[in-house]
Length: 356
Image (cartoon, rainbow, N blue to C red):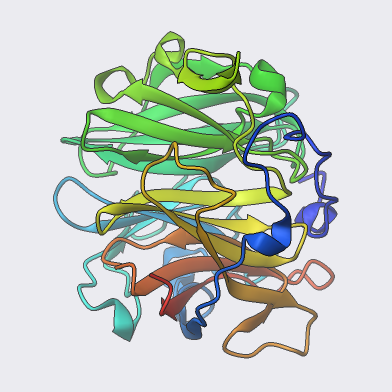
């Protein structure tokens, strides 16, 4: 890896890109008034937890329900030893879980690839074209799973993105042929998150992988998810928002990892708010709702090392909704990396009550 994630931890908030768009309201109007109760449930990775898969150090842990009913968690840069750069490096890798009671913490039932968690497809790291491939989000549609991945030459420098597919609940993956230029939409279609609506569309929130760009919205018919030309932008033109207009930012800020999911008749977006060093959440009626007036709460705060407690975690990022969550009892997979020491570099589970 040629650039540390710490480069992004306190990225500046993007410029006022929504100044000309109606319904942009001050940040202080966004916060919800209802208090939430957040606690750490467990560490999910690290020595004694995932070293049996030869992955003592890893991050992200993007979860999805598999077609056969299990949970699949997708991880980023992974190392055999409990430190960044410690031994066998691969990404992405994945673990399965049959956990039914999230309150007791996620437990692993196996690794994709066998006893040791294998890289999902073969490529050499730090090759002349790129350094690593990082998962962006994973979704299940019918009997198939789709993984959007970012091909990076150093973190924050995306050379292209692509979509992979599995037809056996994550056991094997193959390239769909879908490949996206990193510069489309002004570089705001690199890091994405997606959710399947009950109308047959997959709704996609995306941003850049630099933590200094706003979010845009697109949609695609579920059956066309691997067709780059089928993605339809949501934009503001001639006084109205409409599908097919050039993509217009729907929320400004400094966005890292995101998780958009339909949940309990609503939609939930959780994300790493890099500008304010915390994980925030929004509850909305539909993906096209006005995110400036939708209900919003801070869920978990980041902090300095030595100040970790149940709701205040040193050097955090990520924040993905774990299947089995409800609006009132939300579970998140959260990453933690001490970039100065190289450890901890792990995934944790947090529980948020009182959000919805």
